Image 1 (tube, rainbow, N blue to C red):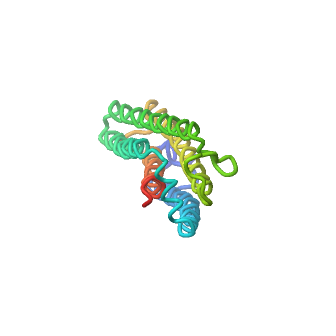
Image 2: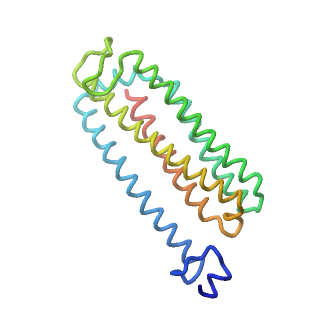
Image 3: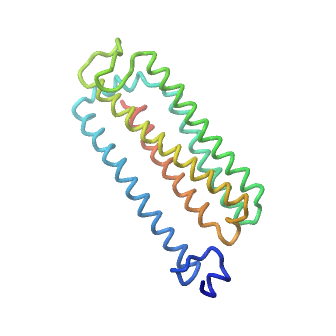
Length: 215
C-alpha cells in the first residue's frame, strides 16, 4: 500500500491521485453511456424507417396508446432526475440526511414509473395489443400495426430494464452514503450513478414523442 493510498482510502493503488481516479471514472462512464445511446439510436433508426414506410398506420396505432400513462411517466422521470441532482447537491454540502432522503425518493419514483408502465401494459393486453404475431387488436387490422407495437414493447421493455438497473445502482449508492463511504469530498459513486439515471430519463424523453405523439 502506497502512502497516498493510506492517506486516501478511496484511492486505488494504480492511480497517483484521487483526481486522476475520478477523471478516469467519469471518462469510463461517458464511454459506457455512449454505448447505451448507440443501442437505442439503432432502435430509433429502425422505428423511423418503418414509420416512413407505414406512416399512416403507425399514426393510427399510436392513437391506441394511452397518452395519459405516457405523460404521467414522463413527469415521474423528469422529477426523479431533479431529485437525484438534489441528493448529489446535499451530499456535496455535507447534509447526509437530505441526500439519503432524495436518493430514496428517487428510487420510489422509479418504482412509480414501473408501476404505471405495468398498468399500461395490462391495459394494452386487455385490448389485444400484443407484439408481432400475437397482435389481436380488432379495431386496427392493417399491415404495419403489429410492427409498431413490436417496436413499442421492445423499446419500452428495454427501457424498463434500464430503469431496474438504475434502481439497483441508486440503491447501492444509498448504502454507500448511509455507511459514510460516499461523502462530501468523495461523491464520485453518486455522481456516476446520477449520470446513469439521467441517461434513463433522456431515453424516455425521446421515446415519449416517438411512440405516443405520432401524427
